[in-house]
Length: 203
Image 1: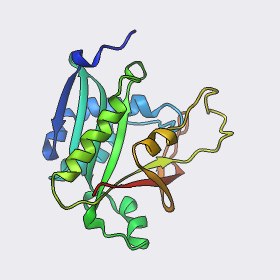
Image 2 (image 1 turned 90 degrees about the horizontal axis):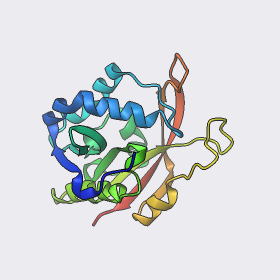
Image 3 (image 1 turned 60 degrees about the vertical axis):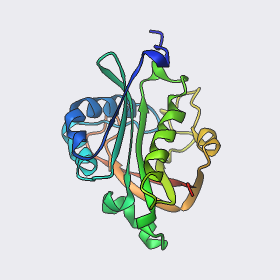
Image 4 (image 1 turned 45 degrees about the vertical axis):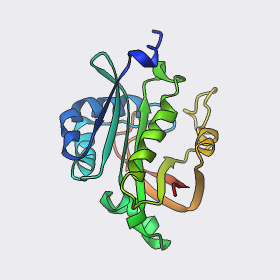
């Protein structure tokens, strides 16, 4: 299937409690995309809705979603770090960051057939603009899972996104790490995954 040109796609911005109107669509998209390497996520709708409630409770959260006709084919999220969960906040507290000044970027997900159209850059543009509008935040960040280079499920042609993130002005902060748990594909129990944060000044 050939991807539609950008002019044929529809964009939707939602904030706060508006997230709840698209929980099912967003949960399904997250589960589909995160099954791929490097996340290998064996997701459930019940867990997804619990996770997304964090964004629905935040007045300053953002969802920027992309639709092809009535199908959500991509989405990206953001919210103030102070509205995130304790396991996300913890490494920043431990290293002395001012959480009041940071916006955390959640997922940036896109179905494979729609990649290469510039939507990855659009996702960063939208989230950074959202953070700047409040005249409070000086830094944006996100985290990425760390998988060994010799992981047995790593595709032969896999290209990590580090170069793209560097191009967007983000730098890896090895001293900022969290451990998240989720079941990998075919697993029945959650196992720990190491996450490393990337940051950018938006002043």
